[in-house]
Length: 139
Image (tube, rainbow, N blue to C red; front, side, top):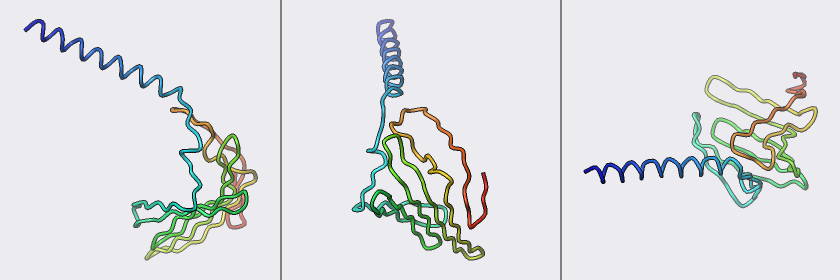
C-alpha cells in the first residue's frame, strides 16, 4: 500500500511539473498571421446574443474589409495588415432591432492597433488617438 501511495504521489508531482514547464514554455511562443487570416474563401458563422452572424472577408488592394451580417445588424471593419500588426482604419455598423435602429460610421486619426504581431500569451497593448464617429470627434 505504501508503494502504491508513493507511486501515485510521484505521478501527481510529475504531471504538475510537466504542466508548469509546458505552461511557461507556451508564454515564450510567438503567434502570428495564422491567427488572423484574410481569406476571401472562408465564411465564419458566430452565435451572438441577437442571432447568428456570418463573417466574410473582402480584399481591397492593400486593405481588408471584414463584414459580420445577421438579421439585425451589419458590422464591418476595414483593416490594414502591417509587419508589426493588424490595424483598423474604419468601422461601420448598422443595427436594426425591434425597438432600436442606428447607423454608425467611425474613422480614426491614425490606424487603431487591433492585434500586434507577433503575439505572445499574456501580452497587452494600448492605442491612443481620436475617432470621428458620424462627424463627431472623440478621444
